Image 1 (cartoon, one colour):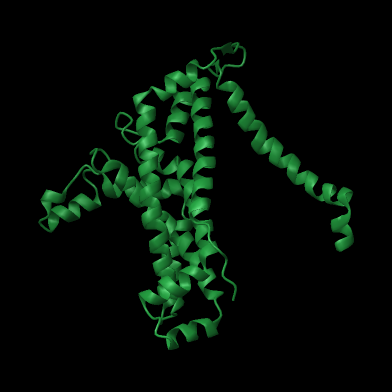
Image 2: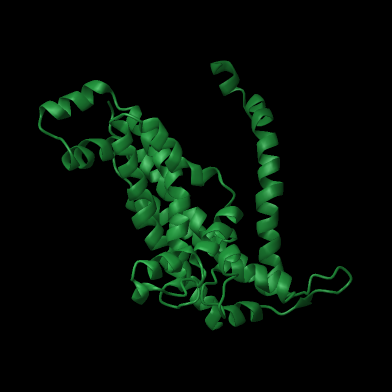
Length: 294
């Protein structure tokens, strides 16, 4: 094995297929979007591209709907990070105690993760629509003051979608955290119990430091997934009403396939790519700490 590792030609042979796929499927489309962002094109094959320079960038960054989509995605990220990961971790900690029936609860919490996002979006759309289940239940128990047009009201629309997304993703982070907690040696956990580190103290001073790498992985997954959010928003509201719940990816889709402006769509794609890099680096820097050995 060491001989193969020292053989640069052998290493190149192993790495080359992956590098080719990575270049063709990721780097080439990114470069194509960057080039396209300087042109105006309606997506029709025989229509020539018109070079417009930075005009597309100027139009996008001064567009109120685009700026609102950036605001929405920032709120999406903050609320998701502050709900999805902590709740998933809390459930994992409770399940790690292996109370009676814990396997059933683990299955129940993970079910939303295996359902199609389209199915989940439609399910919650019918629950949250003005004549849906939620408003019907609120009205039947005398809480008429709480009845809302959840997906239309500007005060609730975006937050409602984010909370549905949180419900979808808890199972993934629960599973990741549960696997990491299961990997902590029993003698470490027993020693913490003997030292009086129980309950919330055990979580803060023992469990979280020892599974920190899995927490970092979950944070990176959340950041990248939020910036690519499209299907749930599109199924539930299509970015409406009047762009109220648009995020960059839904706006990109509309510019490309509804308004046939692939130049502007490419600009939005470039912004999503840049934001992904920035937030991934920032999240890794913020969460950087020494690895605990056990």
